[in-house]
Length: 83
Image 1 (cartoon, rainbow, N blue to C red):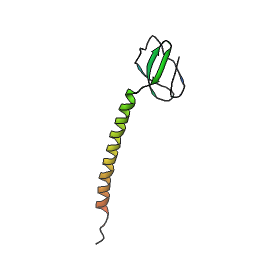
Image 2: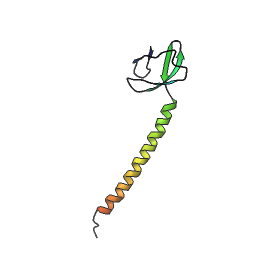
Image 3: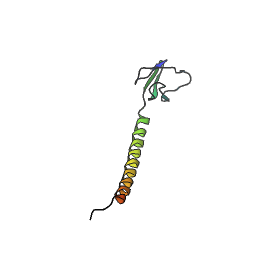
C-alpha cells in the first residue's frame, strides 16, 4: 500500500508491477503521481504532467478569448446605429 501525498488516500500498488519513475493516478483525487521509492512504495506528485496541463490550459483560454472576440463583432453588426 502507498499513500497519495495530495489527499492521503491509500492506493494499492503492486511493488512488482511498478518501477521508479512510473506514473500513476490517484483514484480518489485524480492527482498525477510518480513512483519515487520502491521499498516501501513511495509516491510524490508528478511534475511532468502538471507543466503539460498548464500549457493546455493556456491554449484553451486563448481559444475561448478568440471565440468571444468573434461573438462581439457579430453582436456589433446586429445593433442598430444611432445617427
